[in-house]
Image (cartoon, rainbow, N blue to C red; front, side, top):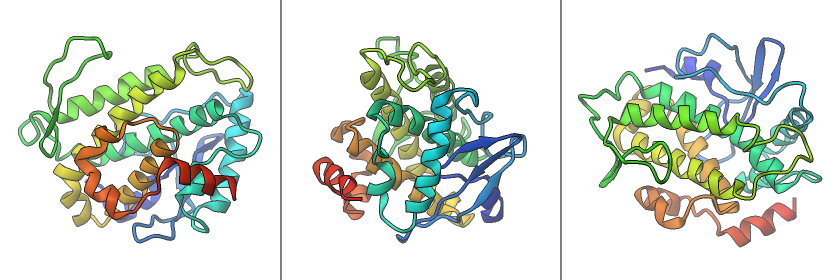
Length: 265
């Protein structure tokens, strides 16, 4: 388990922009579950993450858009609520914004899962659960389901989604390139599985994160996640049932209100 000081160096909620040898990140919030800001991520030093971070190729023009939007996010984050940071910036298409944001979401999930891997053992978590909900693994939606341990399930999600995200036939890295017709539907499967990771960690490992003093990082990340998936209809409301009480407590607005709030910024 990593402690609070380690998280200050490792954590980077939804703000990634790579420069030579250093990934600069930062975030802060003005709600109760706030995260530390202006932290540095040094590739190779992240003992928490399961896998190396992923990034858009630096030579791609969508990477340049990504870096520009990070500046905007840093300016908004902490000054406004999450409705601002999940809304597409001006002159950025919805699909480009979804692609950019998914890189950030994957890197967050990688760190979150890595932070509990010490305790998420086959003995303690033999199946993938979130409260009363149990999930089996399949490489694709139509594949054969099999029961695996929670850590194996979460590792599978990260491996599988990384392959999807870095597949240029699915997610182009050049601004203006066409996305496949099923892009948003396929993206929704990724986010549905990301949610299940949050669900397991909240139910099975929140106390361990709380003891380490880093639970506010998880809260910040998940709140941003829910704002994002609700804004773009990426996870069906029924899928959110395991953590519905937490979502209700945060009073996250419906999609129509999020769109309206984003347009007013």
